[in-house]
Amino acid sequence: MRLIYAKNLRWILPGILLVAALACDAGIGPPDDKRVGTIAGTISYSTPWPSEDQFREIRFVALRFVPRDTADFLQLNRIEFSTPLRYGVASDTFSIPDVAVGFFPYSGVARQATDDVFSWGPIGLFTEDDGVFSVEEAETTFVHVVVDFAAPPDFP
Image (cartoon, rainbow, N blue to C red; front, side, top):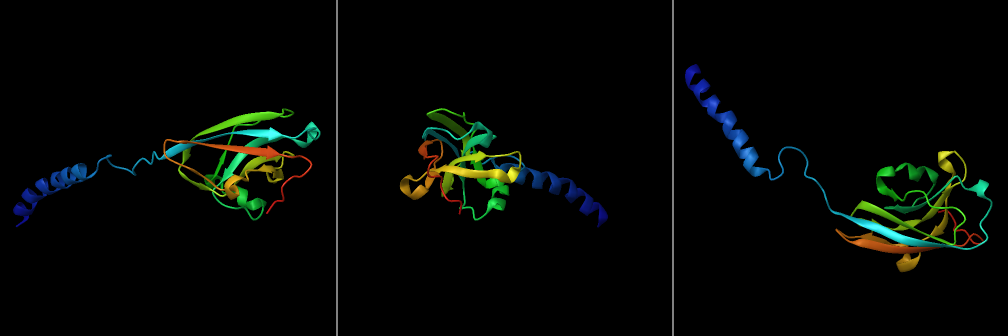
């Protein structure tokens, strides 16, 4: 009985591996989700700018959720952000490549006022189409944000 089992075992393992190899189109591991697009846009700033010491950093930020408080910004896996934007200009542009497809219900320009990670706040919001946009696979979504320093948006 033991001899018959050993003979069958030498065919069972290779058979399982063969079936697994034929069944998987991408090999072993999770499938690559390459469904990405790009967010690009322009930002128009009102003048005059507030004092430069009020701006440690400025970025376009796209959130997959509507934040309720500052702690929500710790959900970094649900946020896309641009490289730092320029201070003191009339307008600026940005591009964020390789963004996973999906909806963004809250987006705009944010500034970090101090070194404190919780000092981020909005200075201008994307308001077209009720402030919601989507990123589609292999497409570029264009947005425009107006920053009016005299009327900053309320933080939710």
